[in-house]
Image (cartoon, rainbow, N blue to C red; front, top):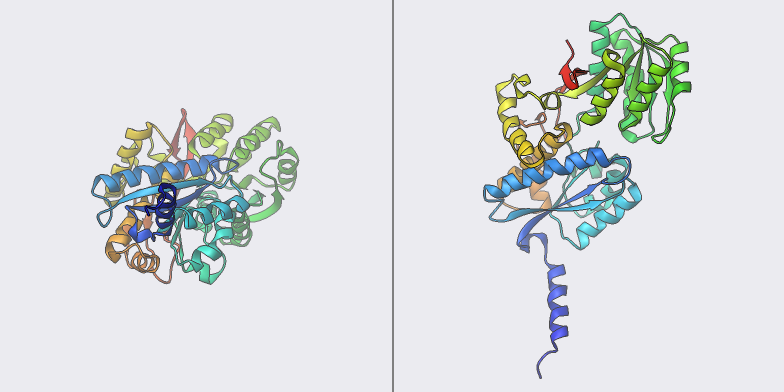
Length: 383
């Protein structure tokens, strides 16, 4: 008796779902991204960088005879949805690894079951908290201490300001920076005289700014990303604080330009050099760094025209290094890829240089930030 056609289709479908990642026709890379919600701009650029990197790898023959395939799921910038999409990509898509965006809370929420499945996580965010989870995660975000130090060093070297106020949002990354900013000020001869907080959807910061000004601060150290910085600079201008410096956090290029347009030379920001080089790659003077950056910049311009390179460059680097680890391991097995990744050694990337090892899963060990300002509608190095 011949099997029923529907029964055959159902069997084949079940077999397809049961295939391990190594048996698939492509190597699937999962990515949990906040494409809606507060992280949409940042994670959108991370997606762009991954996409052009995968296209570049595939154009050169792929990895281990297979093409890379990017599986993207929107976590809506919430940890609850991140858990849902991580599980979906593991069970339905059978991904070999994760390369996820900058929503720290979402990556934290999924890290326990991803690590139990022995799948490596390459992250735009800070590492999860537990040692067993950190064993499987690799951080492509510069340590928060570098962002704080770049601003404090500028104040120490270039200004006579010695009193600062902190204005921070409640995200894990900002809270980590706030602790560093409070403890590290004295090292640079600075004193934190006010410590204010805000929510990401606040529409006005005049009260917090007023308290910072009343405490005698000559500069605001803002810890937090997104459009809130534009509200803050508008509040500073409306309050008539013409001598108050505003040193913002790393941010998307369009937001930096908008804030600089409002506040001019009063607005300064730590920026990776590749972001400043969006209009002139000659800004990158180190030969190894420029050689690493040039193919990325060329690919970005070809696909997107002018775009923000800050997050996208490190996303490009993460895919390129992941591919290199798979080739080194001659495998897509999670443990083998992790072990090979730890042994890649020093790597000059488009967004930074990296030094991952078995003991160090935070790859950027040299401060990649310069202080920039906005002049004539473009981001420039602040002398």
